[in-house]
Image 1 (cartoon, rainbow, N blue to C red):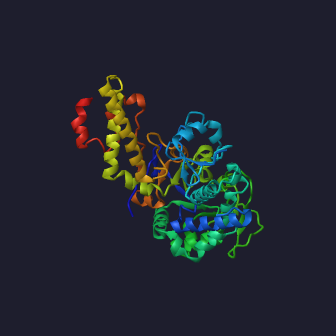
Image 2: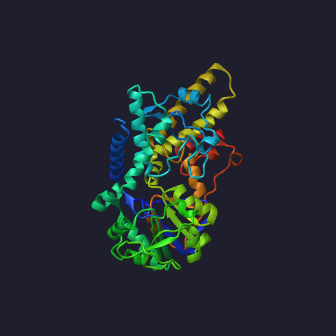
Image 3: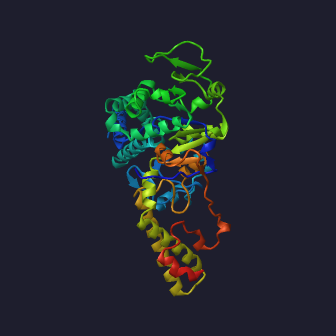
Length: 451
């Protein structure tokens, strides 16, 4: 496996972390792309059967940290929307108003954010259903497609009816990836005296079978507390009591006064969890894959350290470390600096050069975007700004990584320090704003006299 570093926001010292918590799906258990295909196909069939859908504006788009749409990443159904139409839809701008995207859990009145790997089948189904209406000249209100015809409900039924759990449990080898790394992480933490807990929305029978496959039949010995069907994010704010499950998975009726090692608990709430364990503040580090459902409340309201699992980071780091990306980015930054200087000249020759450079700059932007994904580019960055996802990622997580196996690369007393990013007024010269790693390219050495 390729090794990846952490990306801390405030400094994080692992020596101060005594308790490690984990979500299950896409955190302890990483799933193959085959699962996305199964979820999409089943939800599509459910949509056809129950809502008779055969095979606002209804757009899928990428926006940056400041609510600006990245032109060239807007789709209606399966077709790209021209930039001119996007500007017309948003009254001459490509800015999405704050009131449309606000909402603590990522659901504004007109815009929903797709924030995790589980969103991929839903996005695909929305695009395909949207495209069907458009291709067949059927008039429709896009908001109904999502809320009433309910693509969201179709996706939800895959989980509610237990299809996903059934598929994975019947073929663990097909769907679960890198289980041996999960074992290695848990074993290392416990051997260093760390306390571990699990809080997941998945049912015990499903978690138990997956953990037995990855870690072994005694997997519960690693954890001081195991909580299933927690109903996050409501777990963090509701007051449902904990219920204990017996060895057969049946609910017990006794009052829970302690959270005991070796037992399995259902539902509950964070306030009772904190009261019964005494685990508070920055000595707790919790890992999850969903920024809102797993991490936001814990960081903002309870002061826990949080770690976001972002599987796409594996591809992202591979791309940004290629020579092609480094060269493209270097020349893109250089062109930007040259454009800043050339704009003051008004003679025809200079104007012509300026237009050629502007065209080349747009071509370079498209090229670097396509290195990540031809439709949407990087999930972390638009042309020059962080994406809205990146903004929330930095707000709700202290660390982010491709998988929890990254923990194996660091001593448990290691301190992660944030890297200083220059503000615009701190780096007024364009050469100073180039990314680390691009500073010693032959081109820059030759062009250094421009400064």
